[in-house]
Image 1: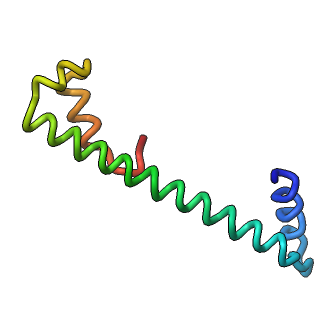
Image 2: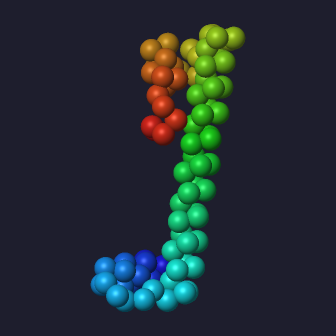
Image 3: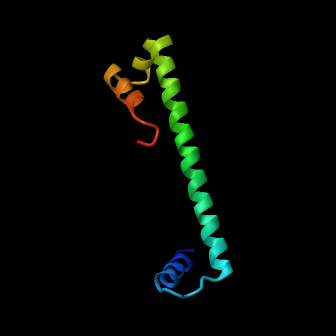
Length: 84
């Protein structure tokens, strides 16, 4: 897959060189996989931070049980969904 992607990039780098339909399908599929991975990862982060916020409000003693401090929890909750 790396070789195909590299060859597609070389072809795309030369003006006037047509990209084969198979290469287009491969690149489209690859972009789709990456987009779905980002979407899934971001949704997981949003859900995790929401659950952490709920836990810190409803059951603050559980935060101690999982080994986090209040500052760590607040820092994690404050992060935007695209940050790790």
